[in-house]
Image (cartoon, rainbow, N blue to C red; front, side, top):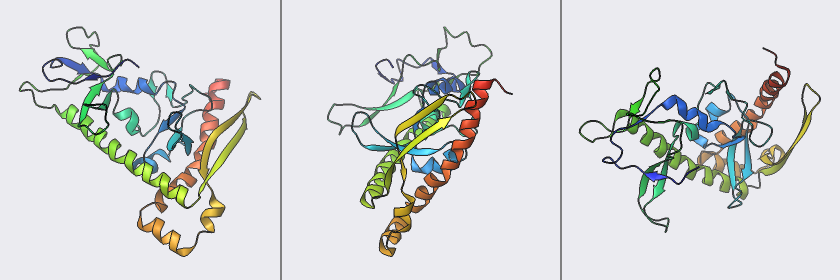
Length: 248
């Protein structure tokens, strides 16, 4: 990804976007970060697991989209095939940066200048594709930009909640390694390591006070949603088998 560019109403007055092209950002993503507020939607189509951030070593919750690095079985024929588009994809190609390097400054709206969703109005050849402007004629935010800012705000809050959930799981000792070995229809096998899930035995053995605390904090629902989402592993395997065999 290229260096992010801060959005400026004067410099980017003519910048237009093709929202559906943002789905291309999901190509090559095997594990997509997701936040607790969207767990229920994610769990209808993908397993939710935990993994460790390669830079910080901290646990993060992710949707499993494939079985190998660079594989996303939910992206095909140039578009996202799921019924729910995760927040991390809804927000593309927009990001929140900070005005200074201290990590304490105000957030600044930025874009990835290499995104396929960007279409300069004067250079766009996407005649059949609807485009959205960032700003209205008076310089105010367009409805599209307002929507994007809403998604980014939801994502920012969700990432904070995700960190709180992880801390609660660690405090209750509920995270356990998950090792998967899968054989596909063509007899190809793969082993998935570096993933984690909820330890259901330890969850069942928690004392009443800890359970009450988890419930009052709002973490029991996301915990059980993570557990239930494991059932989506089988449809994901079926999707992989369909890809391997070319079955309709």
